[in-house]
Length: 562
Image 1 (tube, rainbow, N blue to C red):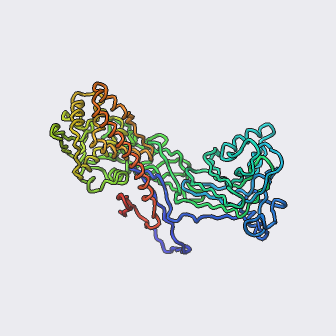
Image 2 (cartoon, helix red, strand yellow):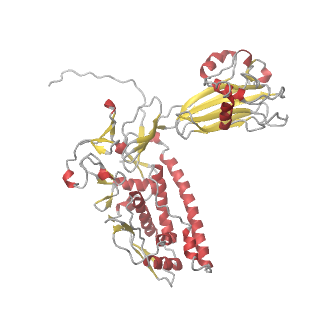
Image 3 (cartoon, helix red, strand yellow):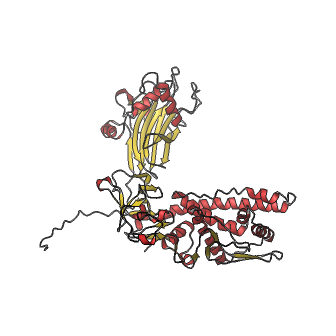
């Protein structure tokens, strides 16, 4: 075949938009961010004659006729304002709706003037109907109005003086409100603010937590006639950097997934593989084979099936998608350990979740054999004050450590021993910092209990300060995994430690006070770690606009291009 002609089309000059995929340790794309989020959208309603056409197109339920008051004394600026008198069609003012995503910010502000109430009380069914009508929603038939009123009331409003008329000194029920619904129009949350005095500014804002819809409006919710004049209503919608989010079942099916409207769909999802949308198959292209997430199986036979005689030749990751992945469809790979060394992906996970340096991780050796994790270390010199020697290799073995080491037996549940790696890495960090804890009495008691095979030996072990600090690494790691839907399943009740030590030695006040002290310190440490984790996430997702196209890893303080 010869090609003797080509055609080149020059695209219109435009600044490129970079999108970044945040992956977990399995390569699953969890979040997609953009370097160029859409600019904030601002909508204002001043009700002046020259602007009414444009404002009417921007807002729903825009006033007309007598609902627009033209007396300048009632306006905040200019001459006109919106009149809501609390009567029929006079309770809900201008409205605005948005389709929202996590991180989006919605705000509203308005000025409101009002006088002295008049007339008699009316019931709230009229307001319920007015609110539904303002957003072009169907009004219930007669006999069902009370239900609608109750439902709307639960969202946000009517919290001041809801049982009768207000005295002149009472706060007025003049509101700006933001109501949030999910994609199925189930109520989620609300933000609102009431006027503090006539002519004052009223404002409310909300940062969206999950995808759905935001309903924004101003209202006069008195159950009697009271003229309220709204002016200079301003609504702002600020989109976040989040373009899409995916959550996964272990074998790759997605749930709670969503993407921003009018954005380019990301098809690189489970394990970072491209989803095939042709014919609606939903398979993932691993290169050597196509993977079917709804079955957890490949569609063709493994060419290395003779090496895995105990498994089906169609099996994905030896039926263990938490510990193994299959980079190209040919061969499963352990994501934690590769020939006694931490894998790159697991080092990355530890690095971004715990901040342990790659240098420390690269020098950490792993061996394993079935069911027991432990980090060998000996307790010495109980009577003289004690010291702790820590060997920083992480070992998985069938043997018990009779010298009082860290014992975890029968950890067949992957999500349990998976989290013990950072616990042992915590000891490695302690060694690097030359940490010593001089608590001989507790160490001696713990060592004796472990040697005697006490059922609560692991609980005693965890209350040794050195181990409690190492546990902070494990807890912090578990919290990080929980963000990606891997829940910690240890289920240990740490309060049992008090009963264990006080059961036969109730007069030993020293032991009880020490245990309470350590528990208090441990709880405080967990709160501190949670705060640091939150701050860490903020730094991770900031300054994306400064990155160029490529693959990056997080080193604990910044993104490093590979």
